Amino acid sequence: MVKIAGGFGASELFQFLRDGEPRTRAELAQLTGLARSTISLRIDELLEHGLVTPVGEAVSTGGRPPAQIALNPGARVVVAADLGATHGRVAITDLSGTVLRSVFEDLVIDNGPEVVLDWLVLTINRLMVECDRPISDLVAVGIGLPGPVEHESGRPTNPPIMPGWDGYDVPAHMRRTFSVPILVDNDVNIMALGERAMGWPDADNIIFVKVSTGIGLGIIGGGVLQRGAQGIAGDIGHVKIPRGAGVVCKCGNEGCLEAIAGSPAIIADLRGIGRDITTVAELVALVKSGDTSAIQAVRQAGRDIGEVLTVCVSIINPSVITIGGALAQAGEHIIAGVREVVYSRSTPFAAEHLSIVQSRAGEMAGVAGASIMAIERALSPEGIEGIGA
Ligand SMILES: [Zn+2]
Image (cartoon, rainbow, N blue to C red; front, top):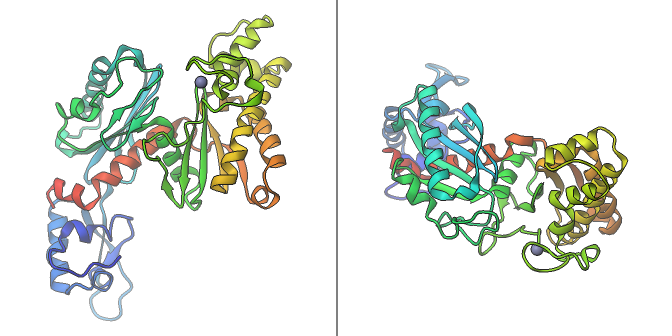
């Protein structure tokens, strides 16, 4: 990790400060192997841009107490946007991920990228004004979309529920207004990042399950989000499962997990026996009201999801499976179904060390993850160069 070479600039030095821990110039010299005079020059550059700030006083070894330097989280801001099929949550956060301002509004992703992204631009501008921050304080934008995304290019790839978005250059659209890095990812991936940061900071192997209209996984392996070769790792909604035999999915195949355990399938089944519900929220309310058929249907969906998760447990060996998404609001019933199958089918050793629980980040998981994604980029050596250090 220690880089002792020519061209060690302020942006590289900053990497030793971005965790927020205060450090003295002497500690930084020891960490980097650089001369104290070089450290002082670089620190001055960072101080000038406000990215670090002197804090407290370190324990003195005699004489004048050495000043400590730490990240100044309020120096700049990022945008975190979690866009779903029918709603969007947009937040402005500081460089520690603290939400300064956020909104949750209706949107229709089917309206296509031009309309939705123009709305996002207006919303960002409004939030920045409400935060009393100039646009020049904005250093990155993180966006989650409800479909597969090629993370490198920021373009959606064959998204099933997003007509008009396939291959659309989302970063280019946003950069018409904001000349900062624009990071785009699948919503389940950013939810996994947010869930880990807010709920399981010490766990390196986590599966986040989003259960809603669609079913997908965000996988953290070895502490790193696993996107896979095309950005669709964890896209389990169209894995074939035995109970789905004969059920045709909207993708055209038969027996897909989503076609029997996604919320539209559960709602259709319950309507078939006379329950007057159309939305996930109504389904969740029905479960909470104690309706036995609804509870059984949701528990069965949990078992179906558990079938696929059992395979994932064998491959990934996670310490935590966390269940989020709109249908997770139905509480313990869906989790009980997942546990029932995963614990009975997994190898005893894997099961013994595996927690299967409800999402801790809840509805803020997506925004938290989008913020992390944006901050990661903004505070990387290239990002800091862009800020001007
Ligand atoms: Zn399918």
